[in-house]
Image (cartoon, rainbow over all chains, first blue to last red; front, side):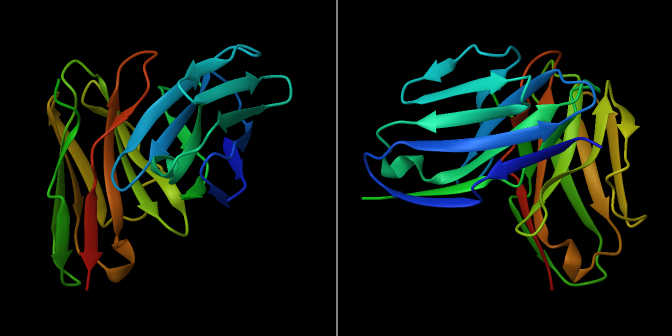
Length: 111
Length: 112
């Protein structure tokens, strides 16, 4: 059974801080790892990672995958209050694009 | 482009009643997924379809839950009879090959 573990479960920081969110996984037949941001409604897509060592970047957010050590990190620099959300990590285990999600990291950015 | 559309947004009903949740996937997407999200268990996959055919329903908690996809643009998730422990947010998502899943805004279900 595929498994995804995220850490920390929650994190409180001040605006301007840099945060690193962690995601480790066990999967039978890895195809991709995805990061989502969830505020009050639907999870919204951030990144899809398929290759080790290649950083994906969007503004202040970036992510990288290590397929040897089976983990990924999501970095957010110069955090803002609008970054407050649950960040979800998911893996596609190569079976019909079915995703297994971690429990998420609740990030709170205080002004 | 319209995203995944779910209805209703909120549903409050009494224990024992039938509940029907609806989902319209993004046009052209051939995979549709139903999830349930709770504080305790996070986001759990209930069932998913490919080209309107159910592929894996191993996440459906009990026989009280059923799902259908009569055509490429519509799916339902039904709970009959409903119980208080079914209270959760139910999400529908859709995708196509090698693309990320896109989620609807969810249905917040409360069973009294």
